[in-house]
Length: 217
Image 1 (spheres, rainbow, N blue to C red):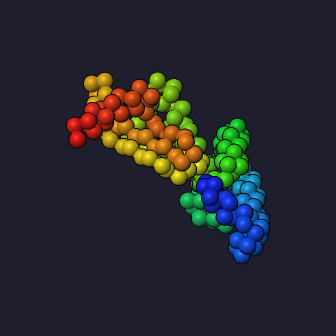
Image 2: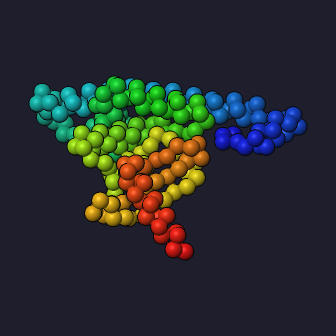
Image 3: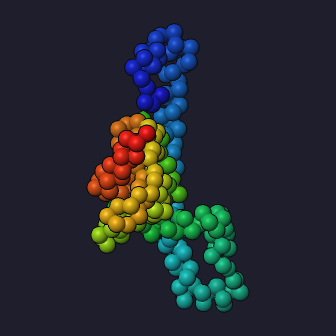
């Protein structure tokens, strides 16, 4: 029940409609599901810290010596399965998440809370956290180098957004800007926000080229 038009809000306010759809129960169920996801994520974060710490010790010379003396030879995959009961790929995700700075986790959670308060669905999970953290690190590295992420990196950063609002308008094309070809991508969401990995000047140049092309039609 997000992004409702005024006519839709009026419809759902109708007592017969509200009772017929059992909207109160639906809203409660949605809230319960959201709370369950939050609780699961908290537990996953706690597990990720343990996974990181345990795996760090498992790789030490002390641990290797003890395991060898016991005649037990485990790979990282064995360790993840036998100790944590998870497959190799997810275990690596847990370790990576457990190694993230606490500030990053807090920021991710805050973004999720803000998005949910606006009625958006979010990917509040270990996988979602890592995807967001990777995109953030890429953007920060590009900013430190005085560059703007473009091409595949820009697309990856966009795909890693905590929230994927519904797109109202999407433009993507290659243009010659300041003597060099650049990938220009712009998405305008229904909430009025604009998403792009290009600078404002590049967008303006690209739009001018587009306007010139439209004038010839």
